[in-house]
Structures are given as structure tokens and as C-alpha cells.
Length: 230
Ligand code: SF4
Image 1 (tube, rainbow, N blue to C red):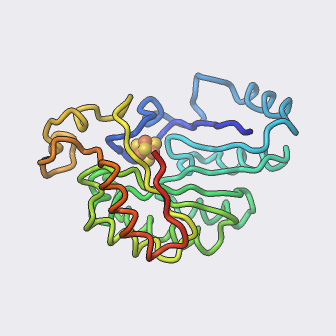
Image 2 (image 1 turned 90 degrees about the vertical axis):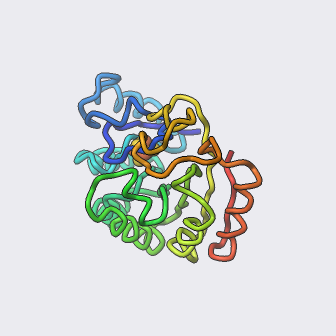
């Protein structure tokens, strides 16, 4: 059993983001709980919790990520990091310091598709760098993609499969239209209005079970293991 620390602030704007309240803001400037409470909570649960997940938002944007991971390791916790992979230099330093035990990195789309979820220059180069760093150095990891049109289709998935070639684990995640950052994206309105260009001829960005299975069959020859997480 573990717990999750959510850090505010993200440089991406994924339309299906389930934590819209965490996209804006700053990881340390959080009114939900104080750092004092956080460390007291973790100290009291030493030996009871196996590990801590650091999620967001995008945790690697926060300068105190190193303090946080060091503190968790000092308390004896295993640390899992959720990241969008946009800060390879931070991922590299965390790995060099032995501060993370497991990394789950999102892959949003093929390199061309990244323009739709972030306005940062060179985002796809950074993504490719993070993939290599993680594959070469992480103690354990997974790459994962939330599957929505038009960020993901068979053609884009062939490119993504090559991006993660030889990875230990690649996860296809089904999308759910619950509380999301960009509800209009799921409401059959033009995806251009959601900043994603094109239109959605099928009426929903959510892929069916059969479509997810088709994506899985595209990726499977490239990686050690590919699963669908619904
Ligand atoms: S899904 Fe992750 S990367 Fe995308 S906007 Fe939400 S927190 Fe940021």
C-alpha cells in the first residue's frame, strides 16, 4: 500500500486530463496541505506504507522535486514518479541520484501530435531524450498512452511503437469522459476548438475496445510487453 502526492502545475494541456485543478499553479504553493503536515504524515506511516507516488500536474517542473525525493528516500520509501517526460535533465538527475525506483512516463502522441498538447518548443525532442534516459537507467519503468483521437490512431501508433522500441512495458490506457480539462473535446464539438485541429468524423475521441486491441497488435512486436489498462 502506498500514497500519492499530487504537485500542482503543468506545461501541457491534454484535453482528457483528469486533474484539471492541478494543471494551473505551482507545486509548492499549494493550499491543500502544508509541507509540515506532509512530512509528519509520512514520518508516522514509516513501515506501514510501502511507497509514495509523486504525480501531478508535472512534478519535474517543481524545483523542490529533489528535496521531496531525498526526504522520501531518507524515510525509507520507494518512490514512483509520474511524468510527461518534458524535462529530461530533471529525470536524468533524479536517476543519477538514485532518487526514484519506478518511472511511469506518458507518451501523448507521435512527435507531430505533441504540438497539440504543448506550446513548448522542441517538446518532442525532449520526449525522445527522456524515453532513452529511462530505458537505459531507470530501475523499473513503464511508458503509457491515453488513447484518444486524433492524438492516437493506427498511423501515429506505428510511430510511437518505434519511439519505445525494446521497452519493457508499454501501456495503452482507455480514456474516460469524466471530469476532464477540456470537456468540449468529448462533447462532439469540433476538435479544432479544443486546439487539436481536424474534426472528429466518428463523433467521439474515445477508442473502442476493438480499436485498442488493434493498437496493441501494432505495438506488440516492438516491446517486451504491451497491455491495455481500462
Ligand atoms: S494529463 Fe498530465 S501532462 Fe496532461 S495536462 Fe494533465 S497533468 Fe499535464
